[in-house]
Image 1 (cartoon, rainbow, N blue to C red):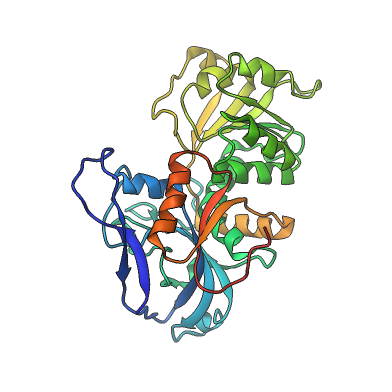
Image 2: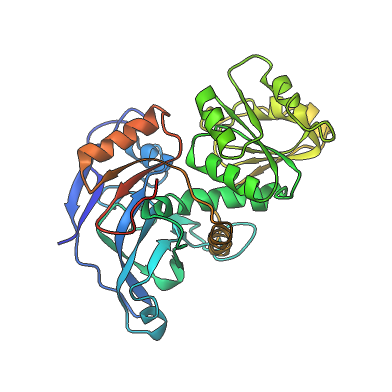
Length: 360
């Protein structure tokens, strides 16, 4: 029987508890007409998985396999000709449902249902196999290893919408600031921006992470903990364009207060997360300069397709920080420790079964 990893219920209040992982035996997957069984070869963690273990994520539940990122091989299908066409293909999974192509947000009345660990979606990728409608599959870009492919879906989609769609500045020569470099989404924004011909700058609390980002194509970066980091960043910008066109932010905190000083009039702050603080000041100085703050979360099925196509065409490779092998709770827990300590540079991956090996 197939196995899966889920969280186990123990006593504790949200934010104070840390649910242990448990290994479950799950039923053999059985596809309906337009569905496929995907034997998973790798899955990846996201910060939402850590929040789920702390009961800080909406709809946290027990018995649902963890993780929304996955890659695998279609090993059986339903009876329809559309489904059968996917047999034996290596695929990556759209990490959620309920959002087809609207630019505003999910069309489904219940909203967007992300896979892994919640009541909203019974599917997760930290298991041997899962069933999905074939409309939620994309053929995996051939240049990606399984670890790299597993690192792509959620972070790639979030980065694509926050940068390409919401910032409106995926244009050659634009100056883009990406905060909190080292996380999966921030790194994907960096890769997307460099591929689009933008001048990408980064912030981090760690100089080593900035140095690594520069090797990936960033023009420069600053340690945000230093006094006057905004002035230091300004000195790095091209003489002919000494302002930022957009900031893609996953931290929150004082980004409006500081960022509005170095953005052009009418510049955009595209925010996909608030890891530093769930609140931020909105200052009159930003209003007077016509600064726009745009929230961004995940993305539509269409945007997922567009993102995968771009990755395929540009031969982009998501950054993998570290991987472990198999549904081994002790080893998977070490990945969560990396995330808790913010020590990772890139995605944390669990390899499952036999697939296309890493080239890292």
